[in-house]
Length: 206
Image (cartoon, rainbow, N blue to C red; front, side, top):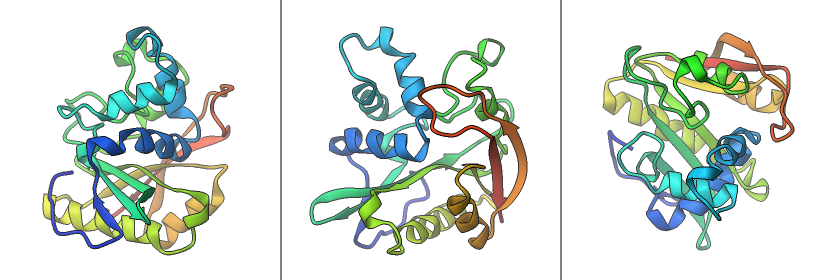
């Protein structure tokens, strides 16, 4: 995660050892969309489960989808929350989110197309925020969002963006409370691995 500044406990920069836990929590944040992506990459990672594939994806250091762009919350020695975020540089660069990381856009599976289309070039993209159920409602999510704002400010980026699910109104209301507005939406393509139907919502804040 670029634009680094000092983090205070329970937040810290992610490390390679955290990658399996990051994958577990990111799949919660993505409502099964990451598992869909990882399942479709099984031929590239023979013998690995979808979560283990996710772990291997997070171990990479040369792309946006990496532990290097992740902050974790650690309590009593356990990672209980994650923030994955990075800049979306320009319209000329390919989609940088694992929620859209598949084939080139012309070959994009219908399931992934909404995530390719819902991006704001030049924004600081909050790819995923997730907390273990027992640690929700304790201010950690708000803390993660403040870290994202500070990082975007350090990067010189004036807009934050994220994708929320219409069928998760609790999350949508939280983001609206934090200053995010719905700026675009796309219908989701139903799939057995994906928890929600309805629409994916692109939300942005200054």
